[in-house]
Amino acid sequence: MAATAITCIPLESTSQGEMIGSSRAFRCVWNLLQMVARTDSAVLIHGETGTGKELVAKAIHEESLRRRGPYVRVNCAAIPAGLLESELFGHERGAFTGALTQTVGRFQLAHTGTLFLDEIGDLPLELQPKLLRVLQEQEFERLGSARTTRVDVRIVAATNQDLAQMVRERRFRADLFYRLNVFPIDLPPLRARSEDIPLLVNHFVRKLALRMNREICQVSKEAMEMLRQHDWPGNIRELQNLVERAVIMSSGSELQLPPAELRRLVQNGAPQPVRTLVEAERAHILEALRQVNWIVAGRNGAASRLGLPRTTLIYRMRKLGIRLEKNPTVPPFQPASAISAPLASTGPNYEV
Image (tube, rainbow, N blue to C red; front, side, top):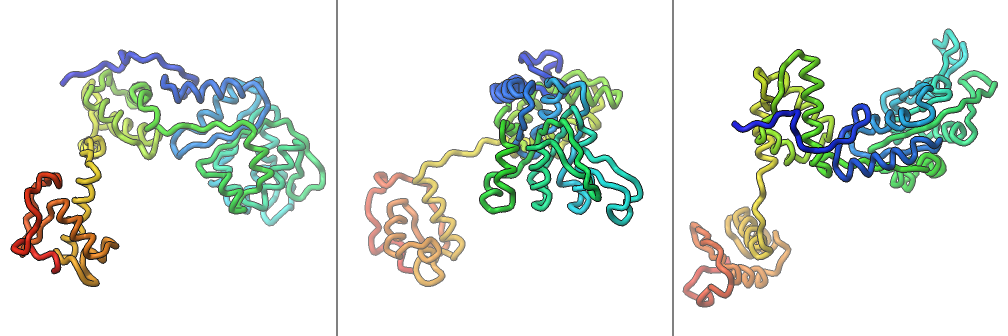
């Protein structure tokens, strides 16, 4: 089997930390990142699950003037709503049952640095005014305290939800959305940047093989092509997980895709035949006829199921060369012009 060494992929790459790519879509994101990094503007990153939103947030911090300050991450979906306010802003001793000591919140921990608010769409409505105040005034009060604490924090938020739609549905405050959405960055899904898949595969293979003490130095052309053709609903995270499974199961120097994954990728990448509209209509009518045991008229007939008058369906069947028999065998499709004679009374009964 022909193989391509993972060190010889002929693509120029751009990388910053774990961000890897050479496609036009990747470079567009990279250019936006470079534009906004050295400002203090709020950034809202939007993308499907697994597209690398946290990597972009970290890269913004590393490229900013705040890179010597702390980088603090909060996943708004992973912390119960009742505890999230304390996590963000901290609390005083005795502020609630179990609050035995004063606790510093994430905003204060991120002072002079960057606070990354992941899954911002899951922030409870009751906390949104307090977050808006911090964004606007850079100040807040801990739970149980009347003393104002000032901070110097740059906010980067991320979501896979449509915040604009959530605003219309009154599930997210409009003023907070506009305050976060100063500089939006939309991350493309992996299926929109398939040119980057070889680079990503090679990166993951090197990283994981080193971690597992494996000497894998090749990826077959066939395997790489299958990976390129897959639509990756889980995006880069799904690709990384598949490569990790493959590294675990590979015994030689060439990456071996697990058999189950191969079958899935082959099925996913198989080209679907393109039908004309006439062919599609014929197939649709045939399927409706089969489902009703080739009955055309009546309440349970194909005409009723297709939402057509009986006479219209009969006309379309004649045009498409569909004939009814007791044990129907449908002939190969012929264009209407190739049907030499109209269906006569000696032919099949369309009134069934």
